[in-house]
Image (cartoon, rainbow, N blue to C red; front, side, top):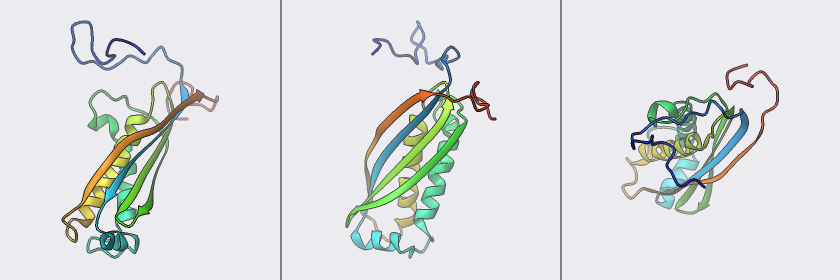
Length: 163
């Protein structure tokens, strides 16, 4: 691990890291968080029985959309050609919904910020969709579970662009 922060120049000013020298790689990141609500609220989320509509469908779309716009929201993120983003939900306890996002790309830099933003946005959307029926909501445990990379295949994206 390096001793210096890569997003700072020699004078300590914020900068975007130059990844031009790095080869494109197939990259994958998985992030999670937990959306906490009353059991009756999560029953309604699962049953798609909320005043604002189908919360899981809306949250999934919000998470995917957020990943696609990560470079617009996080100032020093690179623009990435995302290959795929998936957002999934699993009820792990009566009052707990696990939110997981997986993002993949073929690029010169990692896709973990996109996965983290996807999962956070999905959870925030669940909050927005349920706040009218439950005032004791919270989100916890936002974290990166996995990041991986492997050599990119020759499929027209070797330069990090679209095929």
